[in-house]
Image (cartoon, rainbow, N blue to C red; front, side):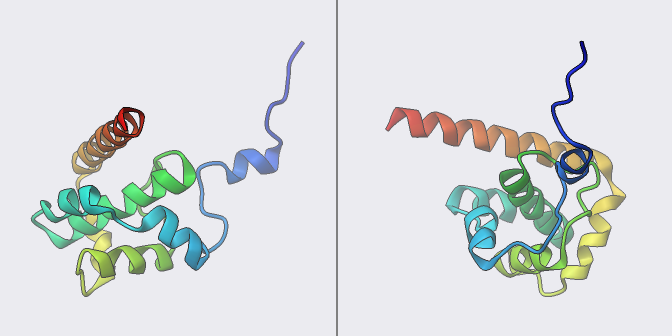
Length: 123
């Protein structure tokens, strides 16, 4: 017997932004704590600093990485850009040019999340 776990609508909405995040959601999911900000600032190019920051918040909010990290809302990009001091958020378009960098950033974000979760249990 087959089971349907998610409706068609739920499947469509999973792992995607369906509306602009509220200011509270931006602060909760996209605010870079000291550890995240430190890693983001190690990226030499502004589009990589911004791309890393957007991916970090995206996985925190949606629970998954986007297949295309640029499938994000402008309000998200703008919020992240302010934190990593990127004056022109449109530079994020360059982030799509090098897929291996996106994967490397995803790995770093997973490692940071695992480390943070471990610290929560250690306290």
